[in-house]
Image 1 (cartoon, rainbow, N blue to C red):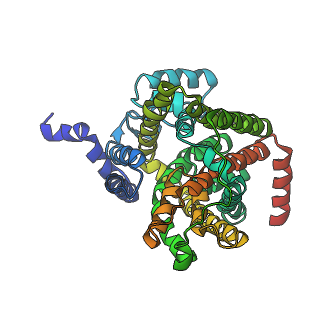
Image 2: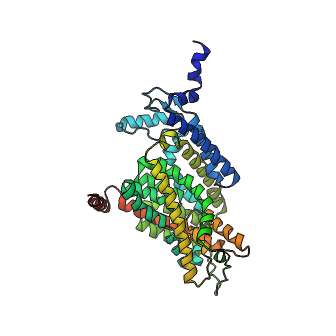
Image 3: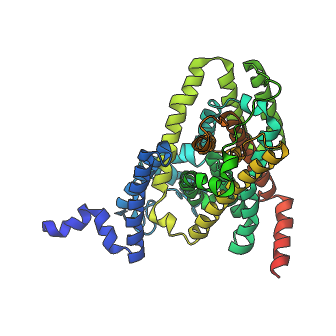
Length: 436
């Protein structure tokens, strides 16, 4: 056999481009370029570098490294795959065979243990929430709880609007629609959790879309603020409160965190894993045990975030993107985040009106709950108009409240729309009557 004849077997990534349909080959090239773009934007600080750099490189690499396998291989039912991970291992097989294939593939694919043991069971989302909680000062919420929670509830508008749209106009099931709609809560771990509970078949594309849009949307939020809030209002300098805010000590903050954790878990037990991790992180912060806080907020959070971004990038292969449900999912995800941003700003304007102009309405965008990104966006926009106006403490309170409200809404969706829920049966009957 000549060297020319063995080239296709040696350079399999290039070979698969020529053996693929043109649209698949073009999509692979597009995803490779998109991966490079995400890395660049992460490095420039336009997007979140901790997520986008590993995600972008994973996306580019997985779409470059598609190889040929035996069509009967567990890796490649269609004859093409990679050695990164298999997201659908064992699907459609008998339980014993599925378990055997899972054990086999854990020893072959590099990222399979990460995916199977931490990603597909939401452990990695819980670890991220634990780390995020250890960075949150719940005192910002306690300083003005009514204002913060009101704005946070307004900022869930995208979730509430997109859910019926996805059901009525795009023919998603109620579970799929809910999993897509919670993208508007802008809380990545909560999106992962809800998608895995309600829509496992769409878990991968929803997760990928959510984190792509969470990065892209924040670049657009400053323009949304400028469109909806006049310059005069953006420059408002918030007066000091008539009464000095109560200074809560660490013990009081820990007690509040513990009570909130128990109450929310009692009301929404299905979301208890993420609720528990969030408030455990807050409790660790207030415990005074600095080595533990440093561990959770440092190595644990950064490692979980690294593998989260990397796994999402690896999952974003051509087969995922070519799913016919992905395009409407892309549109609905962006719409949900856009409407949530609009809702948060409307909440800020509402609070500005109620308080007689004492609250800068720009804090409303911080109700969209990615901590602390949207709070920084709010302060940055205000600082450009009035460098002496400081709204960051209140914005952080709104941001933390947004995490809580997104957990509540996700828990409500998961409770009402699980397979054996009477509410779901009634909803499906109602939808059937509407269609008829």
